[in-house]
Image (cartoon, rainbow over the protein chains, first blue to last red):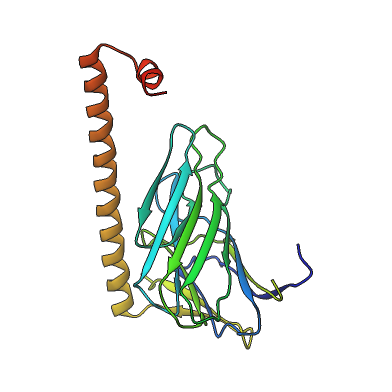
Length: 168
Length: 73
């Protein structure tokens, strides 16, 4: 990891679970942000999605997704930005791996986001995907929220680490 | 039954808080979840319909999917 990476904050979900992980008051002293997540939700499925939002905004998002799931591959578009996470029917005690990269998060241009994620599953069916996302908003990003697509809880030991990158 | 909670981490202070969702937030989350489920079901139905149409076309043409790929290569 580049020596300009600095851990800004992190969170580990406790025993009761949590619907959302919010990073607020993000300092504007970095060039880029990196958010590394290891998440699992309580929903009864093999894989689910974690939606990322900025500054509590629910609009002006778009994304293109490339995915593979063990039996097929494809691409599609959506009006939210999300990765894949593990859900209750995936291999017990496994968590997804996901990284969001958000360059120039304090600039006045629209904010691009890339994501690389995989939902771990010890079976043929396991989903990985790449995302090119855009938040069409000129505001500097000062908060990030992560919420499960279906509104279910992140389970205990799910983690999210937010890093700042200087001079990227 | 306890209310659902969210985790808020203030990056300036490093303070992490566990906050109960308000009734409005719960309603908003439930609405979003219902919409997500509806969209997911619609996409799955669309994918199934496309797969069915593809299989029917291959059947009508009397060729396999591999043979169709060869034709398009």
